[in-house]
Image (cartoon, rainbow, N blue to C red; front, side, top):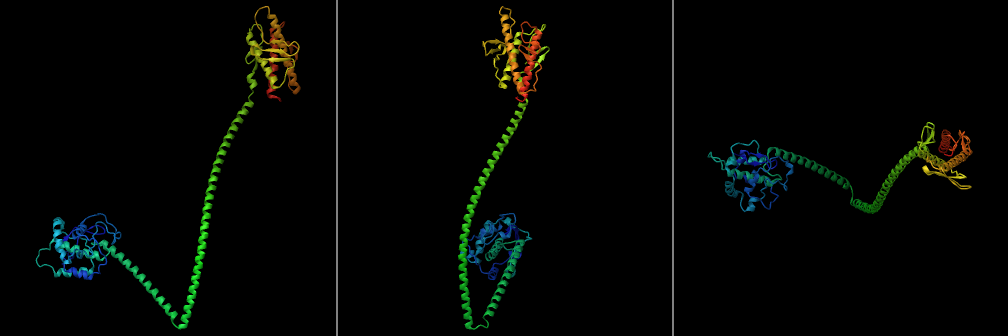
Length: 486
């Protein structure tokens, strides 16, 4: 009969026991106990046989665990606790536990735990225990064919495993694989222990040989001398040791000083790197500012170059012609038969013309001696600064009244005064640059071969004279802006 409820205490795999262990008689346990080594461990609170049996049969884990993770003082929650004097602490003898086990197992173990099959895996026992169990089982085997009760098998199995677990460092039962692993480990430990023992034995032999060799052939006086010599050597060695300790203390002091110096150097290095980083940041900021300034300088230089190439005077005073008329900023200056030009346009053109002459004189820093130009647009005039100090209007009118003749006379005087100022400015420019040439010569009221006076003059001649005036102003403007004094 076999029992299928036991688990390996290492890998937690289910086990089935051999019939030689199941049918073991109770009297065989005395022989097994006598053959085992004495128990060296104790348990303060041993569990009852019912609890031990429940732990043996509880599937606490389905996965296999390594056998080397379990030790005597660190067993898993589902492992079997060792017996270690359980029966004596309970106050009963080993052969008296059958009654307690029978009373508890009959009430707690259900009939379903009985399995008719035999397990292919059996727990491992020692050869001596196995032979004793077989002899006792044959001696106490009943003659009737009825098998032993279930409680007897459970009690026998539990007591056997308690005996094994209490005398070893490993909890039982174990499967074949775990047993083989444990045996291999124990064999390896045994081999290492033997090698260590052989080494100690060889060392002891060498020591004995050396001692015998030193002692052999020496007298008492020689031995005392040798002892004294060894004592002197010992004292010298002690002195050397003390000197070495003093040197060690000095070196430790030096080491502490070097460590303090190292810490100071580390702090100094950290401060240096902080200053270095701040310097780099400042240098980067300055480089960025310098790059911005250079970019602004390049942009300003390009703007300045473009402005230098531009001639604002040519844009402000655009002198050209429209047929027989000379024009300044699109305003016609003069009158011809058949082309009526309003006096408002003529007066505005004279306002731009006197403004241009005034601008050129101021740019050349030239002051007229006898006249002062007063550009006032359509109502510009010229003041005489010497003599009677009169004011002459440089604009005309087409009104028909008795004062028109007087007004035209003052207008003619203003145009002659303007021509005189133009002649003085041309003479000033020629005095500075002999290469500049003017196509028309100015003499009193005439420029070229025509007069600038309007009275007693033809309109086309007056218009041609005004065109010569604009040409002279254009030459002056070009020399002033592009010449040596520009």
